[in-house]
Length: 194
Ligand SMILES: [Zn+2]
Image (tube, rainbow, N blue to C red; front, side, top):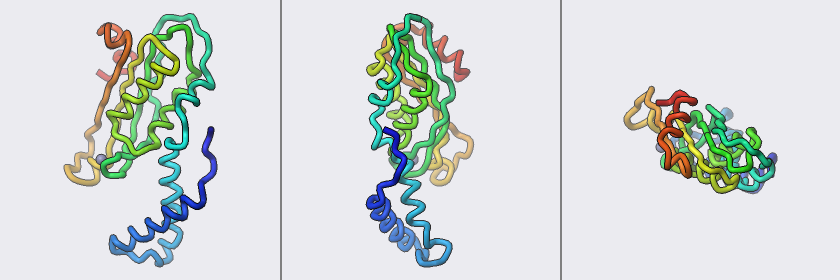
């Protein structure tokens, strides 16, 4: 399940394209400082897209346990790094996941692992938030799930509007969270975002 090694053929093929991109952008890819850059960059991209080679549902199912509690379980401020699918630039931040159990619970570290599995793809923050919500809701399954994601987007900071301090918050919820505003408030108060 864990992807530890690079697929050499893929890395080589991606590196050839990066070499070309460096040239097209006006640099000399044979310059000493850039000689190993295409392979390094290809490995970095391979790592940043590892989510395509991981099945998040299978990952979660490795650590689902019987549990009789009925109160909200929250994992707050899970750090993530993703790439915006519009500009292929990083966006990163924190995601908090809360759920109301329905006879089962999931190992807390698995929640962090599925965050990585969905983050390491070409993403938009809105879909990332919704995919996490749906995954926990359907795979556990839970009575309800709520996810709040707060992120910085390099495509906003480095280019275009150049708004350095803007962050984006996205929210999704399903099940009992959709029916009960009090539950949503309880979750939001627990994670501090208002
Ligand atoms: Zn973007």
